[in-house]
Length: 108
Image (cartoon, rainbow, N blue to C red; front, side, top):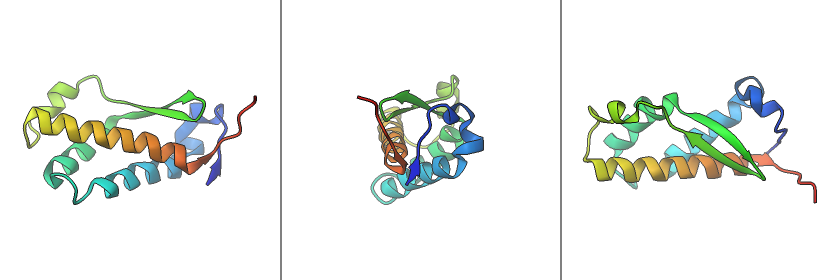
């Protein structure tokens, strides 16, 4: 686990690149075999590759998706409902994994 500094997260790719990459990979592995692998792989490559992990405070993260997600989803496999279900679960797991990879110290 890595000690987290919110100020360093402004330059996340300089300070926390490995942790971010690990969170995305762990989330992918958790879903692999549990959902349509073609949809999962397409979301990983076409949507989440352009996403932005954001720190919201109090140990919570959010994955901001690209603005053109509808355009990106058009050529992807699966129906809209399946696509959205996998995307939602994938982003939720990434956010959870980011939280788990860092040690947080909160002021009370």
